[in-house]
Image (cartoon, rainbow, N blue to C red; front, side, top):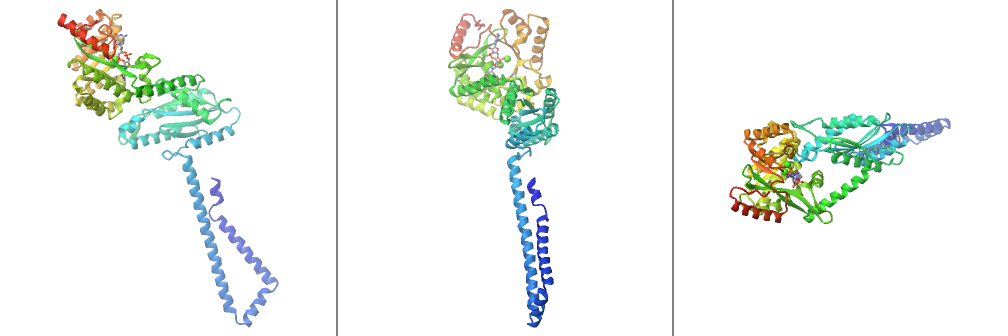
Length: 526
Ligand code: C2E
Ligand code: CA
Ligand code: CA
């Protein structure tokens, strides 16, 4: 800003002209006072030099005009250079897409704010990270992604108090420094306002795009008052928020550091584990009701950890989903499961679990088909299980992924039915082949008639929409009998077999074969 004043229009030129006029005036005073002009005039007349004098005067005037013009041009060039310098400086300090401060400028501004800080004034750093932004780019393209980033930037500009600072740190991550004189409640209200504003739909090219935001907040304290340290602390708090379910905010607390270190270790272990092939599918039998004939297996992931032993999926699937590693994990498991299932009797089906995030990857159907082709496993023998979250998050993406999968002959089951928010509309719209009734309903079946009524309603609903139903978590004969009587198509649970590794599954199949020969019509493995 200071540089524009230095070269403001015409000031320099005016000053220069005044100096030149003063010099001219002094010459005139000297010339008249000491009679130099008279002497010069008579000399010129006597020697007939008047024309020569006039010529020199005109040339002199021309030279003065040329000098003044040159001076103008020079100043114009200087002003241009100063403006270009300012533009470069501004580009280096601002984000090109949104015009917000960039990370470097954010750090400078933060330092400025802490120096000008008044006693009693409190400051906090917020890191605002968008949720579900990647699918926007994947589904609608980069132009839509840019429009979303700009809309979010505008909303942040409006909400963050004028004494604060908003910056874009990169990608879908923003930061803000906010003064909060009246206590931590103001911070909470502000964070909630930001989340609500970002959650409001963004209109782009006749589409309504929805994103969410998770916020980490680090208040400036005596021992944490450096910008980088505060950004790191706010980042830790933000990750904690993401882990707890996104679309929320967390205020930094010291113990978050340790939890996040453990989490970072798990993430890098997971990455290495996938590369080293430590993840294997276990297979749990699925039987037809009431005959209990084996119809297939569900593949469930297990981590064969080199030092920690066998790890259950609830320990790593959520992390794999949040870090985007779920795709690689899925393809590795699918490949192994198809290879194993190739050795089973050809009428047996294989079910695999597909995480919600995977439906937003437009390459999913082609990659599934590539694995089926590579392993020679018939698509009609494969069933993918998706949860209700997948369709709630992005119905459009879910619809196109599921339709492509069904077009290649793969069946789709809606997993954990009853735990999410899917509506009749979703069920009709997405044409699932099967509903899997969640274990929580089956285990409470005998405890109260309410659970039983619900399961009965789900079975009837499935039948009326032309869908088969599988009851999960059958552990008792009484549950089995009740479900069979209600017309549930398939059953799965410890009563028929636990998830088991590939070789145990093969032995299980051999035993089932023997049992069937000995007792035709039953394939119950117990
Ligand atoms: P799910 O898909 O609903 O799988 C059924 C879970 O219930 C399995 O737990 C299974 O071992 C357990 N189960 C089956 N029958 C019984 C029973 O009679 N009693 C009891 N108490 N439990 C029973 P698991 O293998 O620990 O898997 C848990 C969840 O992890 C799965 O739930 C699924 O949501 C997820 N998961 C597992 N493997 C994968 C995978 O490869 N990809 C994805 N995206 N998710 C997976
Ligand atoms: Ca499942
Ligand atoms: Ca399930």
